Each structure stands twice: as C-alpha cells, then as structure tokens.
Image 1 (cartoon, chains in turn blue, purple):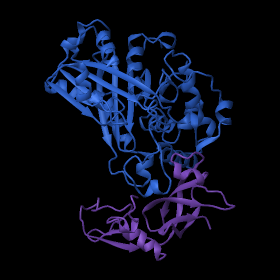
Image 2 (cartoon, helix red, strand yellow):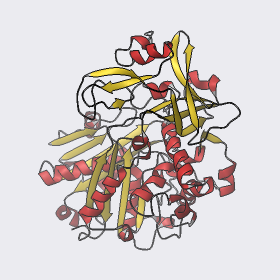
Image 3 (cartoon, helix red, strand yellow):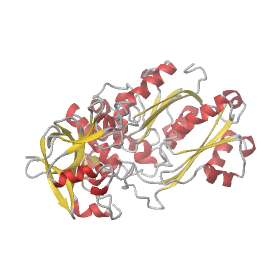
Image 4 (spheres, each protein chain N blue to C red):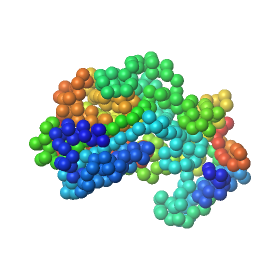
Length: 350
Length: 130
C-alpha cells in the first residue's frame, strides 16, 4: 500500500485517476487484487491478480488491458514479507515429486545442476561465474537502498564454502521483505504527468511449461524464443541496449540470459563475464541496483524500478551516462520467460 | 507422504513396486511408443492415455549433479552432504535421483548403475558410480 501511494505520487496522480489494478501475489500467496483493493478503498473497473512474479508478467498484462480498452491507468503492486515470516523456500516448488524425494529441493538445486553442466561442457570457471556475485555487490555499494553493501572481493567469494555445489551463498538471492508499485498508462496521458515518462517499447514471452526432468527444463533453451520475439518485435539488437536488467534468483539466470539474449555467444558467458562488461564502468551495465543477489528480493520488481530511475536520470551515485534504452528479462522458475524493452524515446520499437 | 506408502500412489506406485523387485521401470505410451519419466496420466508426445510400464536398463551417465552442503528441510539435515544427480538413462529418459559415491568423485559423463534400496519399508532407487 505504501509503495502504491509512492508510485501514484511519483506520477503526480491520485487514486481517483486509476481505473485498473494488477496485483501480483507473493510467493507466500499474499497481496491479491481483493487484498490490495480493500486497502485502496476503490471499486475499480478492471482488476486482476497474477501468480507470476518478476513484474514482467504484470507489466505485460497492463499493456494488454490498456490496448484492449479495459483500463487506461493501471496500478501494479507486489509485496512480500518472506523474511519476517521466515518462509520455507525449501518446500517443493511444483508439488511433491520424485526429484524432491531425492533431496533436490530449493531453487539452488536445479540451478546448480544447470551450472554444473555449463561448467563441464563449456569450461566455465568459478572465478568467471563469480564475477556476477562480485559485480552485483559493486553496484549495490552505490545504492543506499541495497541490503547487502559490505565488500565482496573475488578472494572473499572464492573462499566462501559451497552451499549447493557448484553454488555458493552469494550466488543465490537473499530473502527480504519489500513492497513495489508501478503506474502504467497510455503514452498520451503520460505526456502531461509530473515525472519523465518511460515507454514500454516492446514485450515478449515464451514458456517451458512441459517442465520435464530433462536438459530442456534445466538449461531453459526456450528463453531463446523469448529473446527472438523481443528482438523481432522491436527491431532492436543487443547492441542497442544501454543498460540490462536480468531477474536473478540465482546468478545462473544471468549467465543463461546473457547468452540466450545474444549479449555473448552460447557457452561464452564465462569469458564474457571475466572481461568485466557488466561491472560499473563496463559497456553493458547489469542490474545497476545490485539485483536480487545484493539489493533485495522483490521477485524482480526492483529491476524495473531501477531501469526507470536510470532512464530518467534519477539513480544518484550509480547514474549512467544518459541511457536511453533498457532490456529487462526475467523468468518464472523453470516454466515461463518474459522480456520488456523500456525507453525514454517513444519511437523505439515502433 | 501423509501415511500413505508411495506404492499405493495411483500414478507412481508401479515404479516403487518394481524397485522392490529390483527392476527399473518407466512409462511407455502404447500409441506412439515414447518412454516417459516422471510418470504422467497421458503422453505429451501424442496425447494418448494408453500407457504401460516397461523395464529399462538400470544404467546411465551423469548428465549433471549437485552436492548439498546445506539442509533445506529438517529431515535432510542428517544426510548432509549428499549428492543429487540427473542421470541420462541408456534407454533415453532422464531420471533425478540420489547419487552414492565412494572414492571416485562424481563427474559429468560418469557411468552410473541403479541400486535398489529400501528405507522404512519403502523401496526406492539410488545411483552408484561403479
């Protein structure tokens, strides 16, 4: 609720200007549309709840609601109290099954299988992969909102014991509480509002809902289909992206998406990371707020907030030099992928 | 498991029953012949529901593996560290299971053999590097 009111204030509008609400339920199952509506005190024309996090799915539904005419100004909300309620992330993700019976629990298990395979097939090293955790901490140190700001050198990283070999604690998301909200409206309406508008220049999704116990499930090559769809529909290429956001419950997601979205070749993520492109000062800034590894665990939602801040030039000490176009890619576990291009230029992606 | 033995599970029961007899089985579609694991009520290749359980060779290679040094559930705490692998069966399907290893450390591509074990009266399958 607090985040919702802050988002409305940021846009310079009030609850009376809303005609839509899309509430994203937390992993813990809280915060559906009715729960948020009872606090908003409004009977809006269009409301919906989403089970899928990462913000991309909410953003895309808002676009569809607006394009279809169901709503014109939509508030998107997400909130979770995973940390204070000590939520059990070791529970099986998709119901009890043979894999969890064997002890394959927590997202680190499946992500670890994918990374171990990547290391064996492509020769990716711990030091290359660790550039993600170390890099995210460097960015977080420039972000006053980040929860993990203490220094993390490569030596510190490599001396951490494995949690689920080949993953260390710093390769996996923290668990935190948090609330995030975003206002989505038409480009026409946004022109007259208080803050600089950021345009949704393209959206794309693809799924891996077969979800079998096989390489397709773990390596997630279907992310390439989401990537192809976002590049095809916007006419952009990876070279057009000034700042990149990847939702990162584990650093394995960033490794996979850097490759699948074409920022480097397949299997070349390790050497690419070692070259420092994604670090502060690099030519492909990645998760400039510190991501889920270092800033907070808000299921990818803060990635979008940070993209908007960077594009508006409101990112403080970590502000990049006038970025214009950003890509945000995310996935819902091992079953759904989504991508959005955000830009300050309404002509991008047209 | 809510007190019910996996053998009574309408979908996966035949797997555990066969494990009790020292056999490794997966489902096979009677319509298109596809082998599938884990068990499902229908075939994702041809959408037929006509299914039989068939024996497969209890051998395969490690496609990948992880070693848990942290227990994410209380009942796993006594087993730390333990290894879970995804095995590519010689007959095709992939199977996720516990990997037992002695002197030879696990590695991607390593050969493994199914071992039939029983825990608290429930038969199951684990994998061993010979």
